[in-house]
Length: 439
Ligand code: GUN
Ligand code: ZN
Image (cartoon, rainbow, N blue to C red; front, top):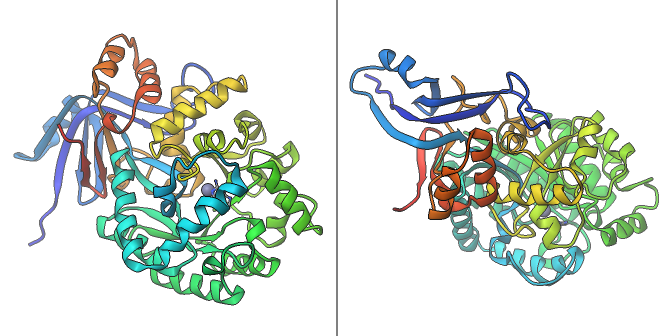
């Protein structure tokens, strides 16, 4: 006899079906909202989503109903670009990108040669992600294959949907982090064989950025993608002006930074380029033409003094924008904090971010940008049961603010500006409650 694992959560429910647009009111048909909703989950998937009163008569007798009235359920948050190996160097003072990499990041990543350390930090990182409601992320490991094995093992054990990859670097980094060009690719091939497509895991080919790879290594990374169109690609692009000058010096045969990646076949619909601050409209158009996405990492861009991302220029070019923490350059793992900072960056550019656009971005928008929207990003029948239970009354201040909100848009905006890990009452992934806030 087979048994099913089935339960219902009763709460406010919000899920996007389409981009809500940039207006103060969301585009017609872009979202579904149930004030007193029922989310029926079964065997790791969503079975039904509806008004509680409408679904109640269909529910099997005795099914567990978890009463979360007063709380808001949305799809689990997605972080399109984050480095798990940098968790412990978050908030390292006062450098711009290239010095920050040399002074803090590379020495820290050397520690991930040790399996025990990689295992401990993988678990610590996943605990922290779930605490802030992030159920899926695209993750940089270190150059050590063991750092990837540890991360995927920990993610698989919890039943999470995660993308990750081994950093490729064959120059301009400490010896302990530097690949032999062919060896780094062979290591990637072994990791792809072991992990890509296993359970809810996917492999992202991960050249760190142009300055730390030879043309030969970038070409070989492109070869991996050509061999298997289901692989992802993650790297950095045009984050910092010093970096731009260095790339121009290292790749005189490329007409601009993006061209370095284009020449090696790294730009496609499953490619995520972190930052993309210093691009012109023609380059944005080239990225859009290939269906790639830029990961907007606002807290990192402010922390490292990299610049103010031009979100609307990307949008105008038809370029997908995803939202990311970029920890350890970022100062907060929380998706809500990422939205807050994205809003603030937008204010300085005269392009404020609506709460509709923000919550769409963290959920379905990021799922689409990462080509994961067939499985995650929406509350809909058949989708994986990955969602967060948000508490708009989590702190005395938030409760006061929420009491003054007149509609859902105002509540979402207050959550995005004032929310943090305390706002996440529960995080579920694969139909399992993975985190429950104490108290
Ligand atoms: N560019 C190359 N490596 C990194 C990194 O680790 N973090 C950030 N923010 N930018 C990078
Ligand atoms: Zn990064």
